[in-house]
Length: 239
Image (cartoon, rainbow, N blue to C red; front, top):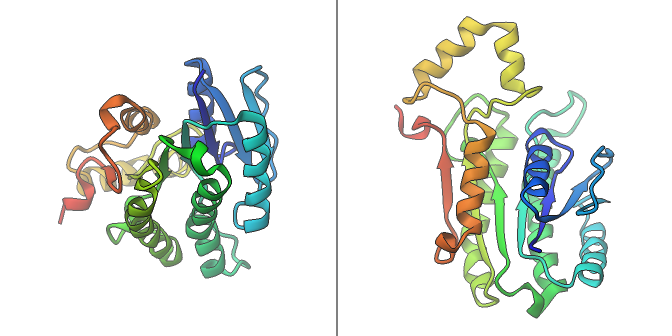
């Protein structure tokens, strides 16, 4: 049975992917910083981890290495763009979107060593790291740095037979997320924005992202590393 780690499993996208891969017969290791996830399945294992802490990340991977021996895939959904008003947005933006992923990738490769061979790592980024869109500057800069980090890191990881790629979605529409709230608040204005900015005039759906993950995880993705797959309906090339 294939084993997959999904970080940020309590988030809307992470939780969606957890349920999908459990249903497809994977052994899923989910992580969350503080929230519990109400999923009861013998093939689901939940851990609370603060990936912005190198020590916490190290302890997590030591536990996983002992319990599961081998991990086939990692999908990292850690990161956020909505910060509280009293938070240091630059520190939070870098910690949550860049440094947490750096810790995940570095500590995994160190702890698992030879057992990490042939693992595929997929990092969920954002088109905010590619194109200037209405998003916090700290979030956009962090995602841009994350994309470049993964590209450079792919050279080092290739020597360990680990593949790493990013997926950058745009305007994800899911139940309970920011785009659904925008539609409920002002449907006409929101749809007009999508129609103007996105050539395919639609939202990115979670199945689009999962399909991209499936591609990277399949044999067809065996010769892909250091890339950033953009799923945005053409928004980033639309002037």
